[in-house]
Every structure is written in structure tokens, then in C-alpha cells.
Length: 302
Image (cartoon, rainbow, N blue to C red):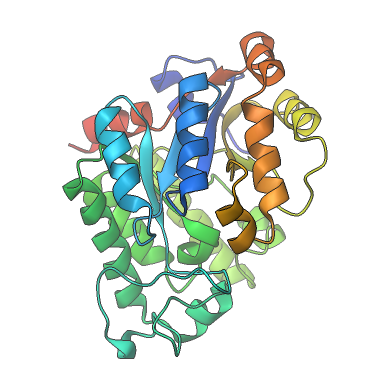
């Protein structure tokens, strides 16, 4: 069993407090995702989100962020373009020898395509370029996470950690033991699991803020996301949890591009509801964003 997360006391919480970051993925992927994020931020039911800088609605997202300087917005490190007819590609290069692109010049659709073909140095350079793009656009980047989990693959995790340390930003790094790394399917052998667990321990000892758990609303079932949200948040364990979703408003564009649009709309409708707003006020959980983690990290690693 893991010891209590030391970041809790640094943030002013008790070891047994349930602290959650309510996070929106895929901000700026399309207009529907940006509008949903803006609505939910104004409603006060989310605490953070991450922008996809390679996507067409990034400039509009950056403009919105500049107009809302208090927003907690990170970079959603993106090296996949998963839809059949709505695609995007790298911001760092058009060099096909990097392996970042498919035959049509877009990112590979699936994680496996990136894992098989992409050069690890090129993946790191791409994520760095996306962070620089967000900063140059005036976004006060609070964290750096990962689209579809692609950049946390064993081939790329070292580069991802180097990026987090270079920019002194927290990321989607859980406090897992070697056994948990194996059970979660993140690694396939005991030696690699032990290496990952040792790296996590070293990060924590250095003052790097880590997560205790990651949970999410599904994209494969739009049924009763209000009830599901209440159930999942009520069952949060003590510690710091990253709770993610992919909300979008219902538009013709969204329906045309994303086969999972019903679940994205269900994510949005749950968190825009009065019921979830009331639940968050009375649930006993503590909702924070990534900014306090970033600020603690900057102070400790300065």
C-alpha cells in the first residue's frame, strides 16, 4: 500500500482528504469542445483542461484563454489524429523520416502507429513545440498531459518526463508500484515495472507532484452520466485524483466528425446540470486545478 501523498500537506490538506482535479480533455479539437469547456468553466463545475495545439480551433482557444487569464489550462500533448475525416498533424516538422506522420501527412490515427513508427526524439520535440506554441499564444500553461496516453509509452516516457522538468510543469504521472504498473498494462515485464516504480519514487522525493489515481467518464456509453459522475466522485479514494472527461456541445460538426459524439454530449450535459453543481458543493471532496501544483513545483525545484 502506498504511503500518503506528500503533496496533500503541501497544499494544506490532510492525508485522508479526497482531492480531485476535474479535467476537460481535447479543448480546441473543434468548436464544440471549446464551447463546452468555456461553458463549464463559467459554470464552475470543472477545474482544469488541456488544449490540443495542432487542431484547427487552437487559435480560438488561445484567444478565449487570453480573455480569461484565471483559467487553468494545460497542453494536451498530441501525436495522434484519430478521426477518419477530420485530421491534424505536427506543428514541429514536415519531415516524414521522423515517423510522426502517416502516408497522408497527418498524425497516425492510433497509438500503435506512433509507437511502431515514430522516433522518440521527434515525439519529444513535437510536444515541446506544442508547449512553446501555447506559451507564445499567451496561454498560462499550468500542466502538460497526454492525448490518448500515447506519450507515456515506455519508448517515449523519458522524453515526456524531460519535458515536464524543462518547463517545470506537472503532468499525468501516477504514484504506482511496480505491481500496479504491471496490472494496469502500462509495462509488460517486471524489470521495466521496477524501473518505472523507482523513477516515480525519485520524482516524488525531488518534490515533483504526482497523482494517486486517474478516473474518467466513458466515451463508449452515454447512459446517465449524472448518476455515473456522482457514483465515481463519491467513491474517490483519499489522495489526489485526476478525473477526466471529453465534453462537447451538440453540433452538426461534432456529429459529422466523432462517432462517440453522444458520450461527449452526455459528459457536457452532466456537468452543466444543476444536479452536479449542487453535488460538488455538498460531496465533501476538494476540487483544485493544476495551477497550485505547478506553483509548488516551481518553488521546490527553483
